View 1 (tube, helix red, strand yellow):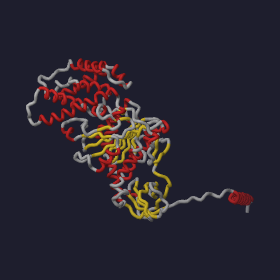
View 2 (tube, helix red, strand yellow):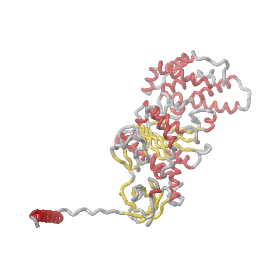
View 3 (tube, one colour):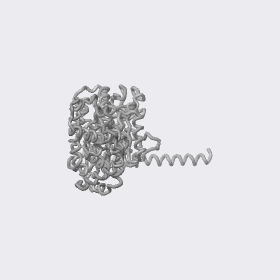
View 4 (cartoon, helix red, strand yellow):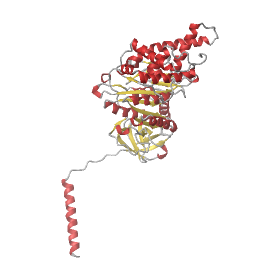
Length: 516
């Protein structure tokens, strides 16, 4: 044996003895407890797991394949799991691990301008999201003592809503109607109108097609609002579990901003698909219909989500969360189960009528069936003076319109009232992606109520409204300041608006014969 070998053996023995000494004198390592279970059944979107006796309700589990799941059912020797990934990757006998935490999503300003899924993962091509923190998707709603009165308006930019069905910051206003009546369009225009304010927007698409979500993204980008919005998408092609948690994840992101004192608008489009996703999960997990499963607990599922919105006090940030949930009806049936649930949860509804759609009246807002239980207290005082007369005029016009269909001979007064009502209803029309400022709305509505549009044909009223809008922006800076200061409109201000509209319409060509 060479001298080099002797030195190597001595070094090894010294190192080995030092290692033994460190084991005897060092602290005992903390044992790591890992609880595992086994997959016994797999279905489309759900899985049944056994062996995790200590798992908790709503706990996040991780499968060996990398798919995540949430514990929804707790039964002796059996756990019902809703999957947050493709069920095709799950196999019978696969190992499942506990995480001892609930589902959490990233929060923070890094999410603004991004398109994400229900777990907060990016779906665009802008790279990873540098989130500030992760917050659980389930949270307790703020107490009454932590809330304040709703006192500030949320301008939608739509005449029919801001004047007659106003929405306040912190309100929950339901958008309800049949298919293809313009529910999503109202939500998009409302988000676009927030370019005039500091309100942040979150659009949560539940069960929507990819092309529909792409159109929303394009509209927000063209309106230069995408950088102040978060677009969350959970489509029908994905796991139903993602559709189920998406609204809660969106609300969690909104709560972070409201805790910083900011105002947030959240669109849930739509809650009908959300209820269907939860119903699908309940059926797949074989939950018996009753108070613990669909349809018995769908009210609680939606209520615990929407109760987290409101206008909050300074002790919890002083911000607000305004929600506009969307729900679909069948043949205008407002008394269906899901719509009536949401009507009772929210603070009012904007009903879109299929009859108005057939009359080419967009937005098709039915002022008779729509109501805002809170927003009128937060409505700007200048618009408040117009809303009452607007409703009365339209209701009287609709009664006379039904009467006139019988071909009865009408006197001049009745024909004049019909012309006035038709002009006012036409003045409520508004093109998509064209939100109006409060000054423009006020000028157009006062001009219509004063009969300045009565002599125009239905086709020319749109051009007349454009002239009035342009004139108001150029000549009514005093009225605009009154709107900003939330002051009541005076008689002189009313006269000033009428004179401005008359001057703008004086150059407009009247039709040869009066129509309508």
